Amino acid sequence: MDSRRESSETLRNKCAACYRQYNRMDHLVEHMKVNYHSVHEPRCGVCGKHCRSLESLREHLIGPLPKVECARVFAVRGCSICLNIFDSTATVRYHRAACQYTRAAPMPRGGITGRAVALACKMVGGGSDGSVDLCARVCLIGEDENTIFQTYIKPAAPVTNYRYEVTGIRPEYLRDAMPLKVAQRRIQEILCNGESLWKLRPRSYGRAKILVGHGLDHDLERLGLEYPAFMIRDTAKYPPLMKTSKLSNSLKYLTQAYLGYDIQTGIQDPYENCVAAMRLYIRMRSQAHPRDYNSGSGEAQNNYPAWRQRELERMSPEELLALSASDYYCWCLDY
Image 1 (cartoon, rainbow, N blue to C red):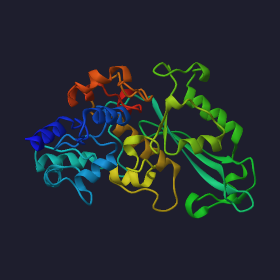
Image 2: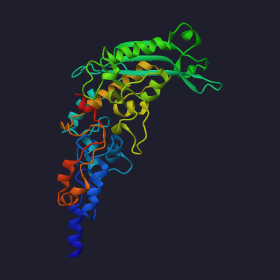
Image 3: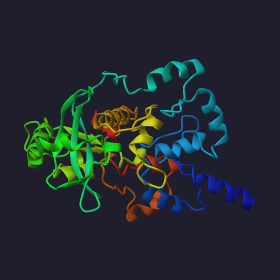
Image 4: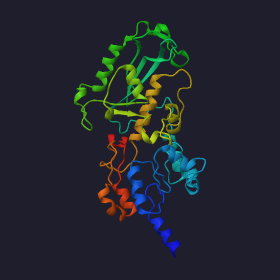
């Protein structure tokens, strides 16, 4: 009897999101405090389990040690790019044709808001050993993948390594290139779009553009620009696109895994990187999440205060999950 009672109690203390089980209810409450489960997390289409990232979901479905039943269903009716489950194999085949992109095929224009601009840079080397990154080329595109601004930039410091095998940049390209200060002003005008930078606020940024890219902190630093963090959508730092170890994935890997084509196979074109980052952003923005506007603010929210401990311990796992909020801003809220 005791063992059966313990088993029943353990099942009652099972997280409704990730299905971890605990011996005591207060342990489950502590789990909910630190994990920030929400409707914005990637979920398995078979068992409904919440995963912290798409990488975790991929491991759950097709990893070295997947969940057997989920892997069986996914092998027949799952898409290996978006990781969704469909009604039949025929539906999967039809879906896959639209889900997988190529370098040449433009993103579908349906639902495009035009509020985002993608930026990518190419760096040459400065310093005595050529290890100092100097911005020598920049590209900005819109959501329609048309180029808004693209130019070579004359670095402020001497170039000691043009890194031609990767950048394709030769000395003559930079000889009469645009000065960095001029490029800074031009990019700032495009991003602010007539708005004053100091007036921008979350959810009320007027005509200013959302800035999309991969590793944008480094690019903006090399360009000598500042832009509000709440206006930046960085595919290197977006939790659902990160590794299970919470480290960044490369843009090359993300494009291959979640768009279905290869980039950076030779000399790297900043336009190609812009397109990949923009497509990833639009795909993440288009996730069909329930519209939960109380979560996903980007601030760690603790909805389980100590003074409610006894009340929380009497709640069901489903009620605890309903209280939980995301600790990152989900891009689906950009709609």
